[in-house]
Amino acid sequence: MGMRQSKNSRFDRTDAASGVAFRRCDHDGCNEAGAYRAPRDRGALNTYFWFCLDHVREYNRSWNYYAGMPAEEVERHVREDVVGWRPTWPIGIRGRRFANGRKSRFFDPFGFFSDPEANSEDTAADDPNQDASLGKSPEGKALALFNLRPPISFAAIKSRYKELVKRHHPDAHGGDKTSEEKLKLINEAYGILKRFFA
Image 1 (cartoon, rainbow, N blue to C red):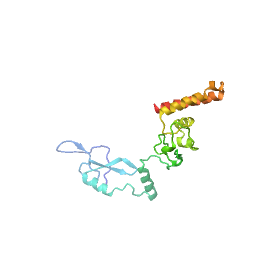
Image 2 (cartoon, one colour):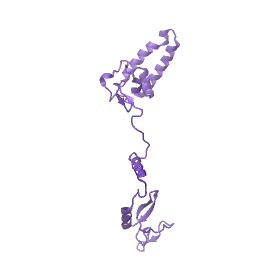
Image 3 (cartoon, one colour):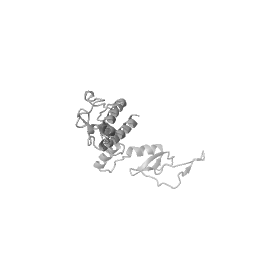
């Protein structure tokens, strides 16, 4: 298909009947209006040829975006297009464990996928992988400090907080510095959980 060299002027022909200027079709020898755009090249998708309806149909029939591209590059391009050109990574590299010990690929703070009999709102966790099941988020660390596992209600957290404050208050330990530091951590954790549940 022969293409006419584009002119600087956007409109290069005037309709005699109406006096309105219009763009001429970019196909050689065609004097129809170029009302339909088509990309010039795979590398220049924002620059266009302008064709009449017949010539844009002809151009579209012969257009192949992948023409001249190596097979590996076509495959990579298709794979990247599936995810909208966003970066991806394999699932499960940093997997977590559910409360019942099964491997998880995501943080499950409400316990939707954990064993309900293995969870208890107000008892201490006996799972050796508790930190892994809660994750490394501030909320997960706070729950781990309180020795609780999701699913959990804020009432249970508040009850556990009161229990820990009584147990670790420096006055109950004769002003012990370790208890004072532990109490600071408990107060921080309670603040995090309060914001999370509020």
